[in-house]
Image 1 (cartoon, rainbow, N blue to C red):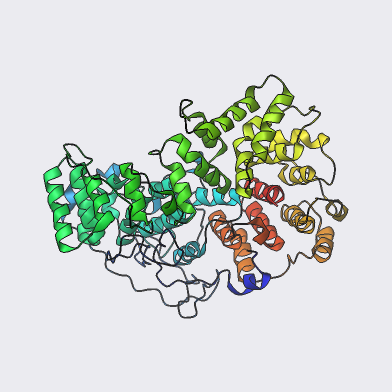
Image 2: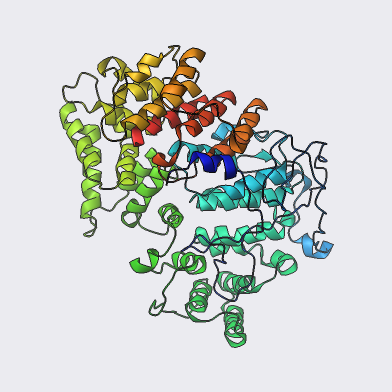
Length: 599
């Protein structure tokens, strides 16, 4: 799974910008995620529509070169601007029901649910970057990325209340952001971005994403305020069924059943897909028709089936869940429709990927019903977690942590337990005789507890993994590390050489080595930090132009592999250096330390 250096030079930024559809849940190739025959284009369709009052593109603005299949980097000579397409409009009478007072309307010039106070990036995070180019980069990201902390940073960038870049419509830009969030497993964040646009400003692209976020969250009711708009902008058969379901959810069972019957007669939908829609329609007020769902003969699970089954409380067979992409595990972990016990395994996967926080994972274990006869294993974890906080002696607490860390068999499972125990690890005293310092420090750093971790600095051996993580994560470090410090790092195992390269790349990117030692280390540790390609030039340029959002997006492209072993050390160097240059040093430190913890 490792990204080759040759491929970085030749294709990390090469953009396949032909209009792609959202992938089916069981596969990555671009296909509709709705039942066969729907014929809609679920992936956001590229649009050149510019919102009224938006900045006019300036000379020198790059745009994707569709003919060559590459994306020009900032500073490239622009081609001709795309021809704007007409946006369908509704009549005044049709819009009246959606009309808001002027003070309550939200501008398309700045779209998103979160601001800096909520931990998101600032509105100008993409600076003067070309919007078409940014959207192309978003489509290039193949989630999940290697780093949990980078995934968190990418979420904070995508859900931010962002100024709409040049040459794109604000609603369309929100749709692209939501599309990437869904691929990352961030179903709730994707929905929040879609809903940050007033319904009167929805475009075809955003309506498509509203359908997708509705299904990912198991919330068909999300569509009920949009069916009239969709009838004029993007009226297709999936919206016909949405209208039927919404009639039922709105307490009009007779009309809903008539619409369902018409769909059955004219072939709009059939089989289990129709039955699931009928079940949702019958779950509203005054709905009296019971619908039994049988999965016999169903050999795959698509988003329509997943979303409506989730909404209707229909259990999905395990073998069908095995046909979906991993991102759906994160969707399921976030779904409040499921009880805590059934969500914890998926929540641990989501925690390893950055979708679930340490606090959320602790809360989920705390919500497991102690009287659930099927929850013996999960309740055992919850008891050990409790003991890690309140056992009478420090050694008892350490023993509880060790049991939690040793139990999982997979790498993601082991890392998720470090996330789970971060706050408990913070409470451990440094004078414990049998402290597992490496995992205690790694656990604290999963929650960003960098200063708490530093209290172990005098207790760890120089050249150990614990020392390396503390050197990278130190928020107050003024230490200059020498070439000999990196050379003296002696991790065990078959990844020792690679971990030494990653330590060097991290320290160099954080500016904690002098130029001479960096040059010497690059040669002797075989880390080609001076090599250039399209990706390095793009991320370095974004750093110089102080575009934190663009840097995070390009970092995700550079690290789009599920395993840390697939990330070249020179990529880590450029990512850490660019994040630091754009005021994101905390994230840079955590990513660098995570490389040591997960290798």
